[in-house]
Amino acid sequence: MKKISILLLGLVVLFGACKDDGRSIESSLRYDGDNFNAPQLDAGTFEAAARFPANVTSNYVGQKLTQVSYYMAATPQQTMLKIYEGGTSTTPGTLVYEASLTGSITQNAFNAHVLSEPLDITGDDLWLSISMRTNRPLQMIGCDPGPRDPNGDFLFRDVDNEWITFEDLSGESINWNIRGVVSE
Image (cartoon, rainbow, N blue to C red):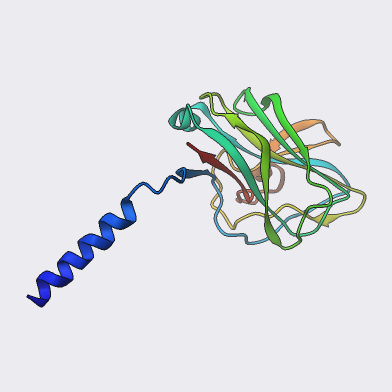
């Protein structure tokens, strides 16, 4: 009798946890693991980005990107969130969202930006980018210890005006701590 009672209690807990409570279901677009470090970048303007190709975003068509989280070690002079749609496997397409993060960053922590207007997921490539400007060498955007996902470590540098992977630039295998939250 005791075993049956425990089994019934377990079923009640299981089904109670699965009921619809009216909250939306959230998913995460990310390649990174826990924050491990933040590479030092020289003075200048940079964009660290994670690319989510169509074969990933097609699983979320009809849902919305509602938030972007990112790890910031030190605070740059200026920080922007940029979201692009489309593009190629090495270069983002059209800028579809931009917001200033300057003044709202907590150092050595994950920060979250809730989009002022959620973006429809269309099934096109989606690039989540943190743009940073500094006048001195600084460890800004966080990264995990790797191994690198081929879409998790894009970097734009104003000194050469092109996108490159951080691995091609430095030889290090990392993923940026940049994550998107998708809701139904």
